[in-house]
Image 1 (cartoon, rainbow, N blue to C red):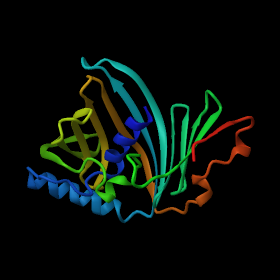
Image 2 (cartoon, rainbow, N blue to C red):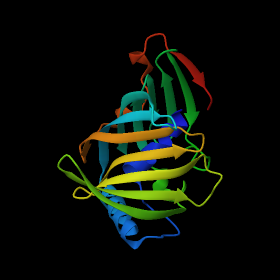
Image 3 (tube, one colour):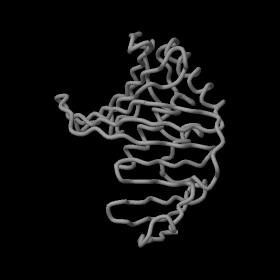
Image 4 (cartoon, helix red, strand yellow):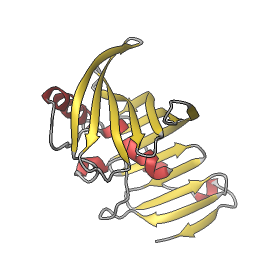
Length: 216
């Protein structure tokens, strides 16, 4: 589940660092602008909602979460799970079990993080096309349809919705091959605010009785 969350959050907050095989110049221009805007942020704090639907469109669950990023550091809170990363170590905390799993952040591994797209590490090969624009409230939203060239991916389509004026991602929908659809929508986002590095470190004193599983 956490891997799916990371995949979608990459598209949600940092899409378009480098996409090969462009099939639509207009879509590429939008993606490039989103990437350029995102790279100007020293920090990002955002809230988001998460909706899971089955293949027929029935809503299976709706949850909310928060994400904070600063360079290679991040903190994700979502559905009883918290993930802390200080750029070296990753702490994955399960509230229900009161257990934290500690592992090293291996830049050469397949571990997916919200920053990985900027290193051209994950899913950079897509065909993409601009589907058009629509109004959502007072926002003009541009939708880009993306299809992975690698057919072995666990998903076959991603729909990015971009806030045209802000040049930021409004939402992303990932269509899994198994049929489920995962939609992430940004609620609020603040950028370039001071964030203490302690935010990205798990402090076990704040979690009485927590069991540690150290995999380092």
